[in-house]
Amino acid sequence: MSSFLFQCFFFLGGLYIVSLIGGFGRLSGGGILGCFGLLEWNWFIKAYIGLCIFAPVINSYIDSADERKLRKLIIWFYIFQSAYGWIFPAAKYIESGYSVFSFVGLYLLAQYIRRYQTKRIASTGAWTFLSIYLATVIINTIWGYASKRYGLPFGDSVYYYTNPLVIIGSVSLLLTFYKLNLQSKIINWIAASSFAVFLFHGAPAMNLVFFKANCIDIYNNHSGAMCLLYMFLFLVTVFAISILLDQLRIALWSRLSSRIFKPKAYNQK
Image 1: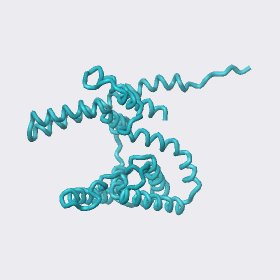
Image 2 (image 1 turned 90 degrees about the vertical axis):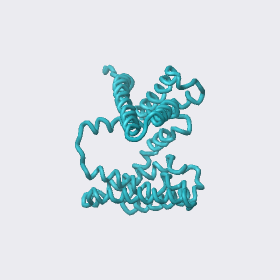
Image 3 (image 1 turned 180 degrees about the vertical axis):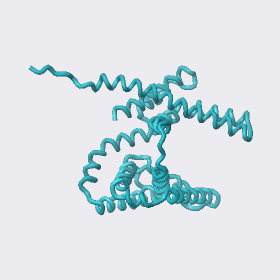
Image 4 (image 1 turned 30 degrees about the vertical axis):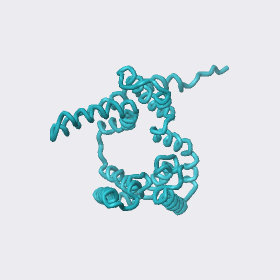
């Protein structure tokens, strides 16, 4: 948890300072609060911390419950969430999936799959999971387009994280890569800093000013294939910078944690 919090503050606080020095950010109370994850836009940070707090309790239940009880709990959980967080979004604490409540459901589902569905996953090909993922994407795309074009219901809720198709698609995509069994030190090295990319994009001063201004500039000054090429190079550059900055964060945390959490030596008499 402490490493996660340090990573959040390193990027949110560090990028805010960079925006002030670079002149594309301004000093404000909201900006300072954002460095500590105290604003609405950085919902993921708070939801993840909340999940970590409840994780020991959830794990205790999972360890004591058998497969039938855990499966029953998950089924009722998603019936409840779909009813009150998707079809009729009347429960504010679900927040369309942007909440600790929904994270708990995902955690339960992941634990159930890991503990009780490994044999079934082992006997299912990667293409099956990929097909399920593509099917959910196509259905949601057609549904979203038709709702905007012809005024069909649930237009906005198609994109909610509480949409069952979004959840099924996400799990299927995860299992697709799990079945591919890729082995790469480079991929693992990059994956370890994937959250850093999210934080780099999530800083308001960077997202709303720096990223938006550069993307608009590329769009206005280039067209066709060149526009796509420059946009791709810009995104790859931002991605690479995020990964490299996280290496600095890892080095700093390694030094700090070794001093902060270093076991104290006691003299034995």
